[in-house]
Amino acid sequence: MTVAAASFLGFVIAQRLFELWLARRNTARLLAKGAVEHGAAHYPFMVALHASWVLALVWFGHDQELRLGWLALYAVLQVFRVWILATLGRRWTTRVIVSGEPLVARGPFRLISHPNYALVVAEIAVAPMVLGLGGMALIFTLLNAAMLWIRVRSENRALAPYRDP
Image (cartoon, rainbow, N blue to C red):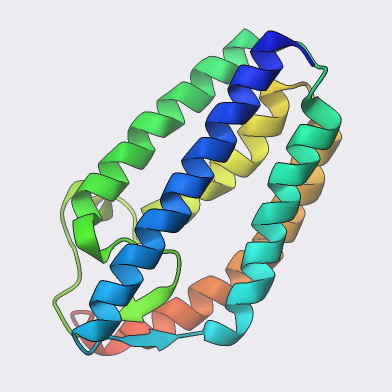
């Protein structure tokens, strides 16, 4: 394993583990306050897709050299990630949780309706490219598109009563 690939992969794994911890904490807090989960049936498939993506990155990318242009783009995406997490704060989770509070309309949500999904689409394509894995980027982008088709429809239905007419 190259040191650069190991460092990049270690960052991706640590970031995903931190997000799972944060999401679990926020989900528990929201549900304890009476929020309701929607679309839970598809959640295990989404987890399996993302876990497979990380495993494939490690399996196929552990001995690859980093492509610095793609790495720079990945770094920019992480700034977008922090902006999204900071904007949602305790409301950020990996599940579709509806609390009845007004929808967030500041930060990146002023610009696009699903910024976290846009970020994940970009990351699923860009991270493999950092390691020169174009085929993997294509395959997981297509799989993620199918998952997001289900996920976004579920979330839009759950949030429809809270959107302005």
